[in-house]
Image 1 (tube, one colour):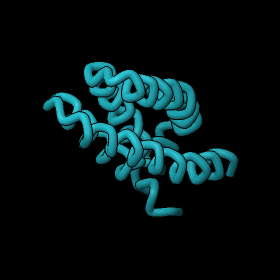
Image 2 (tube, rainbow, N blue to C red):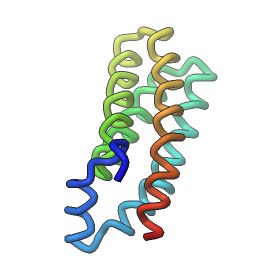
Image 3 (cartoon, rainbow, N blue to C red):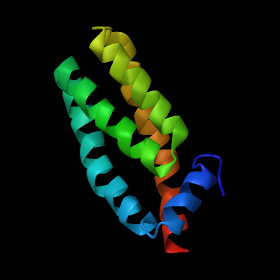
Length: 111
C-alpha cells in the first residue's frame, strides 16, 4: 500500500466494515469540500477557505490520508490567521495531495 494512505487506518476501517462507506464519503464530501476550498480562494474568501480546509482535514484524517490532512490543517491555520499568500499556497498543496491520494484510494476500494 502506498505511503499516501495509512494502512493501519484502512485496516481498522475495513475491520469495522465501513471502509467502502468512508471511501465513498471521502470522494463525495471531500470532493465537494475541495471544490469549495478552491472557489473560496479564487474569491479571496479566507473564512470559506478555513471552513473547507477544516472539513477536508477531518475526512482525510478519517480515511488515513495523513499528508492531505496535514496540508489541510496548515491551510486552515493560514486562512484563520489572515495569511492569504500562505493560504493560497496551501490550497495548491491540498490539490496536489488530493490528486495523489485519490487514485490510490480508488484502487484500494476496488480491490
